Structures are given as C-alpha cells and as structure tokens.
Length: 314
Ligand code: SAM
Ligand code: SF4
Image (cartoon, rainbow, N blue to C red; front, top):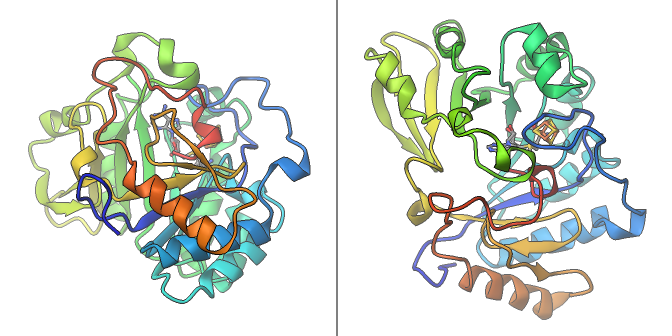
C-alpha cells in the first residue's frame, strides 16, 4: 500500500528479540540488556499473526532481525510459519553469523530465502574488541555453512567506522573479487551508544568511491547503490543514510520484539500492535503506514528514537 507521501510500503523488518550474544560497541551497552519477561516479547503465534496482517496490507518481503535473531527460541518454527504465508515473496534474515555453523542448514530448510551477515572487520583482534564477546573464526565458519546450505548471493554488511575499520575497505573489496558476495558498506548512524562518538567515526560511504576509481556503478537495489570491480564475481553496495538521505525511496516499516510498529527507524512514534486481532490489527498497520514520517533528521541531530539499535533491528 502507499504511505502518506506516496511511497509503496512492501517491506517489513521484524525484530524477534532484543537479546544478543555479542555486544558491538556502537549498538549495545557492555552489560547487555535486561532479559525481558517472556510475556513482554511477542510470541511466535503473535509474530505470525502480525506478519499475516502486514502481508494483507501489501507487505511482500519480511526480514527477521534483532538483537540476534538466531538466539531467539523457536526461530526455526517461526521461519516455517512465515514461509507458509501466502503472498509473502521473500523471507530474509540478518545475523551476526556466529550461530550459522549449526543453524544455516535448518534455516534454509525452514524456508529462509536470503541471509545478510554482519561483518565489520576482517582482523580477529579488532573483531573481538568491537563485538566484546565474538570470535571472527565463528563468523567465517558461519559464512561457509551458509554457502554449503545453499544460500546464494550472500550479503556481508559492514558498518564503516572512522579510526576502526576504514583502513580495511580494500581488503573487503578483495572479497568481492574472490566470492560472489555483495559487500555492503553502511554509514554509522548516531543512536544509542555511538550517538556521542566523535564526528571522525562517521565516515561517508562515498570515501570508498574516492579511494577506488575502478568501481563501476551497476545500478541500485533498495536503499543501496551498487558497484562492481571489473571482472569481479561479487558486488559492492553503499548504504548512505547520513550522506545521501534515501528516505524518498524507503519501502519499510518495522515491528519491535515487544510489538510496536515503527514507521521510521529514527522516529519516536510507535503504534502498539499487541492485543489487536483481525481488522483492528490490519487497521493499526495501515494507520502506521499512512503516518510513516517523510524523512529522518540525522543531518541536524542524533536519532529521535530512545531505543538502541538492538531494540529495533537496524
Ligand atoms: N544481530 C544481527 C546483526 O548484527 O546482524 C541483527 C541485528 S543488528 C542491530 C542489524 C544491523 O544493524 C547490523 O548490521 C549492525 O551492524 C547494524 N547497526 C547497529 N547499530 C548501527 C548504527 N548505529 N549505525 C548503522 N548500523 C548499525
Ligand atoms: Fe548484537 Fe547485531 Fe547489535 Fe552486534 S550489531 S550487538 S551482533 S544486535
């Protein structure tokens, strides 16, 4: 369906948990988040019901996210239920990759079509430092497991952070020469723990283009501008929420793990979907779509949402 600004909204990002087995410094506090009571988080049945209603409102693609979606109990059952929704064209999942060694194949069998794997550095020491709890080798095993399970065109999502990984961009580009993956550089957004970080941490994705004149533009997909190095099997995506405001192209709505519909990642406005069923649920989703904010205001101030990214899902 169309929102109040005439944009087609057909993509739902669904957070299934706030919890995570990592503590990435820009995303989560070191102490993690308080585990919520079971009843404060949407059940698998509620998520399915909301998803069905969203598909009835025109959603064609759902992405499961978190926190880390693979730590959510019942994730495979949820994927099976969502995959069975008639009218849903694509079921995707964004993960830190650490649990893919065990779960890649079951996820594929449960009907997940595509995986995005977050990977901010190729250096083990830096990886441990940034994630506080993670090991890079686990993620590599996860990527391998995803390929073996039949996930094609993997996307690797790299948040660009000045002074942390902006000296590794050439190494990430080499991955696209060796593998049929899309490496996507995402600009860091000032929210949660990183809202107060120094300006120098916020690097424009265009710096990749300035350093690599060989990159050839091959179009765009969703909010990503896409490029390729000559002859490379893989591609490069630039996602620039800060330097190129892509709100005019946004097709997304979001639902948090506690059942709040968000028209925009950065807005405070939320609609509580819990306890709504049937036409009331659909009406609430339509209302959320119609009220989707026209744009974010990151150029002028940090994100308006009081939530950390792990409480929304990216
Ligand atoms: N745990 C999963 C993961 O890391 O892929 C899914 C949830 S995570 C919140 C989703 C994505 O948001 C990750 O790629 C993460 O790097 C990104 N992210 C988190 N905080 C961000 C920020 N402030 N700016 C830009 N991207 C951010
Ligand atoms: Fe966890 Fe993903 Fe946030 Fe890292 S970015 S702390 S993996 S939710």
